[in-house]
Length: 381
Image 1 (spheres, helix red, strand yellow):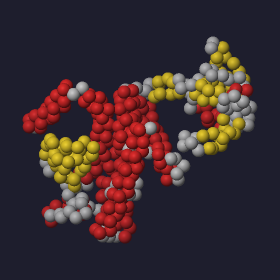
Image 2 (image 1 turned 180 degrees about the horizontal axis):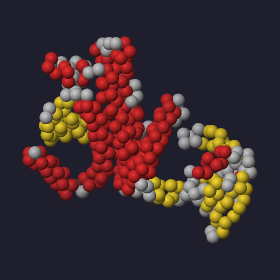
Image 3 (image 1 turned 90 degrees about the vertical axis):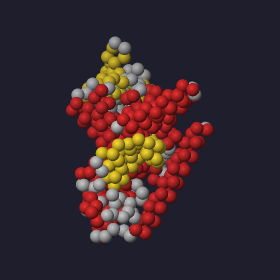
């Protein structure tokens, strides 16, 4: 343990000396640091999912590495070497019998990954991506508990001319407090009331300054742009929020419930976005790679720790879904292999799995090249 502490201290000393002698190092560290922290947290939780599931099912874990490449520091506890490796952009859990061509000693077969029942192997694999969603839920819960829930007020921002709201007398800065006899306190409540009253003249009460006004508004159907830039028919009155918000304090139960709902909403939106990408309804140019993520992480870090945590949660959900895609070499690809083995009663041949993984690697390399290209275009434009 003393040797590990000395090694860590020497690494910190090198960083401090570099920062002191090279002022530019502070700028680079501030921009890259949040990215490394974000990626490190996500990698840790992903691999922790595989690790805990493997341990639960009695699989021998030889290494738990944060980072890739040569071992920097570490500690062997029991049969597992817990280590920090040279390159922080990655990580892995090494289980006995995990590789396609791993040789397993007779006495270790019972604790080998490859000799476990198919459903156990599937659970070990799926727990990695699953922990991305647990991590996101935990972050949303923590932010809601410590910071509260940000809620848009019902104050009106833009009022479109010739739309029902404008004709009813609403103007920018007015605050809607009642609609169709229903009290309105947040902007989120408005769309539901509007949709349910298409073509109907409904009473509306709003506040302007210190005075309260009553009017009537008739929602109409109009073509608007949705979140993905598509033209859709929507029932509207022609107003948008001012952007003003309040922060609502939440208790433990409310914060947890909010975390679950937020994780579900982000997951749903990410899946829909992925489908839109495949359908080419969302431009591929919107995809971002490590450079773009690093830029966003740096920006969110400047806005405060809560923003950085929320960004990490969003990224965690995205990575969870990405890992579940049925692409060989990803966790989703392994799940497909195991599903085939479960149905057919025998595993795919080593040659077929190797070919599939080579195809998967080729797809990922193409994707990485494309997102790097997008990142570079964003920088030079």
